Each structure stands twice: as structure tokens, then as C-alpha cells.
Image (spheres, rainbow, N blue to C red):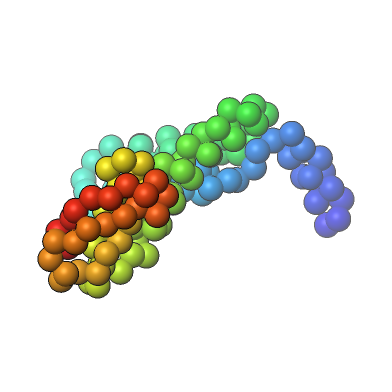
Length: 129
């Protein structure tokens, strides 16, 4: 068993492996493949299989700079905003962006018109919450 691990480790040297983008694509592929059971036709299954093949291509690719850039794009533009959106408390707070710098801010709901000062750029503006 140790010899197999050594050979796999040697094979994966210089390769990217399964990063966040690969795992996200594999989850999306599985959802599409299982959604094909509900929706007639093979369209969703085909898209799912293509996503799965591309995820494995990324995992075994030796172009680590390109794969790192793709993973960074995925984490900053899709995974982190989605995860932070899912964890927000929308019942008690209203979330909005600063018009000057784009910093995400929150204010308690039910306060009416309030004056908000951005914590990053110190821009002051009014918002209804």
C-alpha cells in the first residue's frame, strides 16, 4: 500500500490536484446528472459529464499557473460571495454596498432613513432600512 501512495504522490508532483473549483464543478456535475432523472432527455446529463471531465482535466493538468488563476477567480467571484450570502441574517439586517468603494455594509432593519458611514472609505450616505 505504501508503494502505491508513493507512486501516486510522484504522479501528482507538478499538478494542481482537486482544488475548490474542481470540487465545485464536480458537485454541479452530480446535481446535473441527478436532475436528468427528473427532466427528460440527455441534455443535462451531457453537460454534467462534460463538467466532470473538465474537472478531472484540471486536477491532472500541469499548467498550475493557469489552474491557480481559475481557482482564484472561482473563490473570489463565486464561492465566497455565495457562501457569505447564505450565512447572512436577512431577518434582522439589511445588507447593501457602499456607493463609493463597494464595501458590504449592514444595518438593522426597521430604522427608517439612516445616515451610514462606510468603515473602509468613510463615505457618508443615507439609506432606508
